[in-house]
Length: 326
Image 1: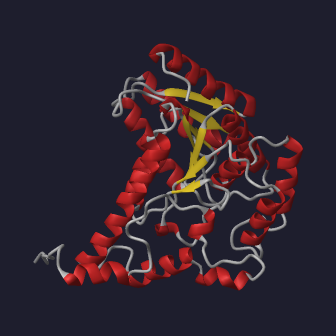
Image 2: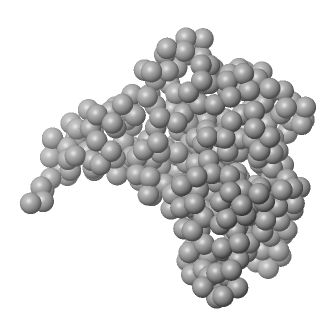
């Protein structure tokens, strides 16, 4: 039996005051608001910061909302996150929004981590808004690269050397070294990035390197938005089940031209995508047989080639539409 709730009643208003998250956000989170209450000099404070209070409440009340009131509250929160993302994305020519997908297990001392950071740094410096799922691994490398935009490659390497002291999430000092980097290298405001994480995977820390953080309760909405806003293409780096899901969801979106155009699907790391996880040859075969249409596929080990593929696509689309520069 469906339980009906009167939106105008006092009970609902009181419930909105009760939940530990801000239901009516007027802007996206930033590191200082998501991690309000966290002091890197006192690592134990992380357990009681805003983000962790919300995550613990999320687990206690249930990943699936247990009541209409909780369902309404989370939906309102996610609505304002969606609106905030739209406001940021609308500041950019649509093909300037580029996403990187990849696994959270990638270590900071992995060569691929540095490669992803370089790709993100250079695309950001070229005017792209880089987007990721906001967590650790490849997602953090994306946000770090954007954060270090405008600085030298030597400074990026120094930042990574600091992060390597705690190479994977769960290690002691994982968050603290991020703040050491941010203190040493303050953000250059000319460059922005957007991360879109979820409390469904709240055990993975959200990277504080992102300029804007759109953290959702509903992962399905978050996944759809990640793929839907990335008109400039998606760069796929090694990952596991979640990344595989994103590959095929993106392929379907391109096949049907759901959003009016197809965007590049760039697979970075030939060995991974052809041998360890042979998704690329399968997509090629399906495309050749006509099972998938409109797939702009590419496969490379070169950071420079990744950047060229994305920027060439952006130039072509800019020339076709005659858009004004963002």
